[in-house]
Length: 235
Image 1 (cartoon, rainbow, N blue to C red):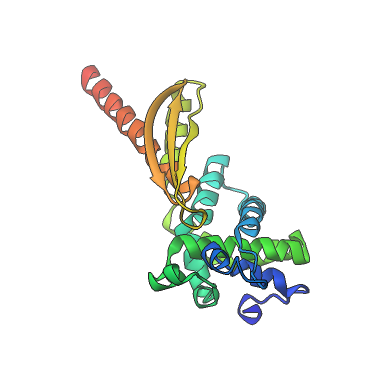
Image 2: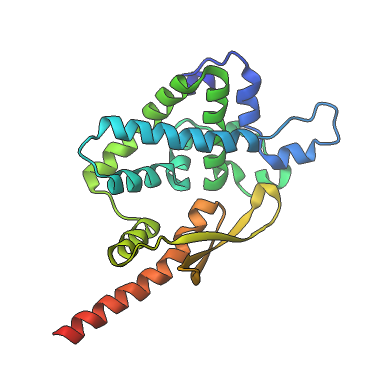
């Protein structure tokens, strides 16, 4: 795995931990040799990834506005993108899964691949520091960034909603976690978007970041309807 990643770990146990799904750890919890799963490294890797991507975009793409940088970063760190990168490194077959997850194709599930990839980034940061992690992230995601720039940067619902709201008021959409259900390795998050304290929509996802995009669609639809009505009334 180190050869595929292009990283030589001083403490290889960190890489091994980054490839252990919680379901595997839970099944071996009674064993003396039970291993720690990747969730803590995933937590760290998520933050490191965001910082690395922001740093790289800021320095490599001076013409991009703050809004464009934000949208591009959001697209690069979302689950499906990370899962695509993880498949490039052939991460799936190396992830240790519990029997149930393995039987249902967990090694090729986007949410698991993305989480493990973030954990690998966290492991690199702990083992070798920010600069090594930054170079790894830049090399891994650089091609994706260039493809998005060539195709044009689409607006995700969260960014579009914030842009529309701030055109007419100083309010900022607030996203509130309503519930988190299921076992640690298969969480389902429900998120609500509030505007001036008023609920405007709800959505679900296996990651909080993805769950926040769905509720943004409801107020976007309402705002679009208002714009259409206003245009028709003035014509």
